[in-house]
Length: 470
Ligand SMILES: Cc1cc2nc3c(=O)[nH]c(=O)nc-3n(C[C@H](O)[C@H](O)[C@H](O)COP(=O)(O)OP(=O)(O)OC[C@H]3O[C@@H](n4cnc5c(N)ncnc54)[C@H](O)[C@@H]3O)c2cc1C
Image 1 (cartoon, helix red, strand yellow):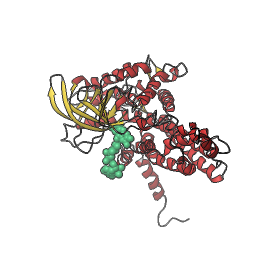
Image 2 (cartoon, helix red, strand yellow; image 1 turned 90 degrees about the vertical axis):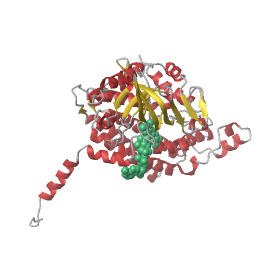
Image 3 (cartoon, protein in one colour; image 1 turned 60 degrees about the vertical axis):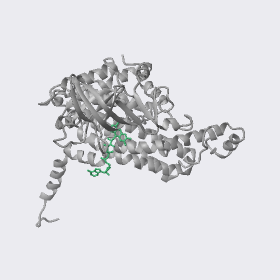
Image 4 (tube, protein in one colour; image 1 turned 180 degrees about the vertical axis):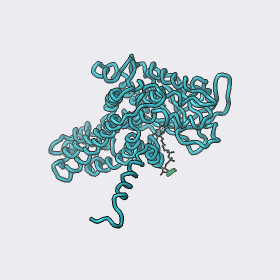
């Protein structure tokens, strides 16, 4: 059976080196910058033990995301499991453990991609997948280089390699059991020192995580910041100071081609997208629900233009759903003879374009519906409890439909989701978490489809000439 939330939390108390605001954090499960989010992640593990969810979340004793999908039905079952976890945070925890689990299942579906002339990482890739699946482990990953000094190999020793340098941005890394380090951007052929991929435990000596500002720590209470107080998944700079990595944890080594191919020639990236597009659909459902409640609360919901704006948002939810279902329905076999399947590449890649462009627009549309009210809330819920201010707020902040406490609860949730610093980070996340536009727009051209489009246009051109009559 999978780990319990308590077992997960205990594993985080391993002496890992986390830094925040000049302070070395001793225990992320106890610190006000991290503890409530750690509990939210723990809650996901506990859901697998809840009899209402176990059949959806667990298969063969592991979370479904670790299982290698072998049919369309397997893809659908995975998506149902992704959806349960996504709904637990309303889509705001992007890098839940099923994300890297799905990528690891992608590696296990095509381990031959890790076999090269100079290094054979196939067994290690399979062992990585097994370790994560059997332990129910939470893998984070950092595959983006900072502007300079990305992680590189600096020495070979008996039993392994020594790596030095940094990777940006490790979402969820402070809450993870292991961090997979690699590079997704194409490297120059001579850049073999940086062409390395490996996975280390977060408490490995020399591994440091330097956290960004904690929105959870700034949140005054759950009432005032219902999302950022509990679902701040964190992003951290990974620094490796001469970290020793045993050979059995190395996946690709001094090989530029394999270091990129592990993402593109295994189905890992497509499984990532399947998980994240399910979460994205869930997040849009939540935001649209928020828009409906806001307009009803302020009595604008019957204005035709407002109804139409809600219609547009519901249309975006349907689009997000259609991308998930379409990627499943256009499934493709994975090469290599192991019987794996992957969500359709063309639609999966297109989801990145759609989601990156749609999210900021949906947020802007809902802010337009919300008006100034989401800004004009008292500094904290304590004002409602104050003997002098409470009665004033109850009198002047209510609407015909909602007493003040319900109204403020809704407005504060809306601000956290749409306007806060946490919300700004989410907008950037949805645009960039799987690469910048110049990367995913180019990727779409690899997915094929151009020939069919070109053929259709050529067919039209071939159907007439100067002499053709109307
Ligand atoms: C909130 C958040 C969480 C993330 N989490 C993770 C994570 O957990 N793990 C991980 O590995 N990565 C993560 N990422 C990093 C993400 O993968 C990168 O941000 C993304 O790949 C873009 O890389 P970059 O930030 O270096 O931007 P750049 O590649 O520098 O691009 C930034 C902008 O520069 C311009 N630009 C740059 N190069 C070109 C070009 N060749 N052609 C045209 N325009 C160009 C474009 O305007 C582009 O939008 C996360 C990012 C965010 C924002």
